[in-house]
Image (tube, rainbow, N blue to C red; front, side, top):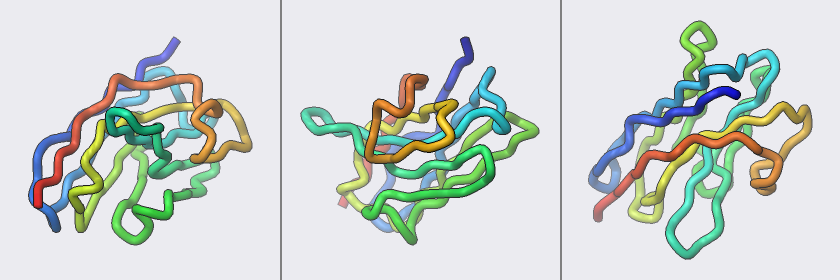
Length: 124
């Protein structure tokens, strides 16, 4: 069983940037797709960005053009660069992994492996 551990969350003013990291121990990039999700208390988990084992990226509509997902395979680390942050981006951000070759950010159940999450708070 691998481990997913997020870091990099914090508080930032609207318009600012943050970069989240997820150390994906035991989830080699050639076999697993990785993704970022976020959740606000009382609301459903939302898919933010995904990166499959072939390097294809996908994004949720609300973050397209502002967020970028990337990976350093040598460090087994997934990143989420978040720019032009808005108060509505405030959430707990978690990384997730799947061995599925076909997955969707809109299907949380496609991702069986999860980290604990890191909080992002954007103030206006």
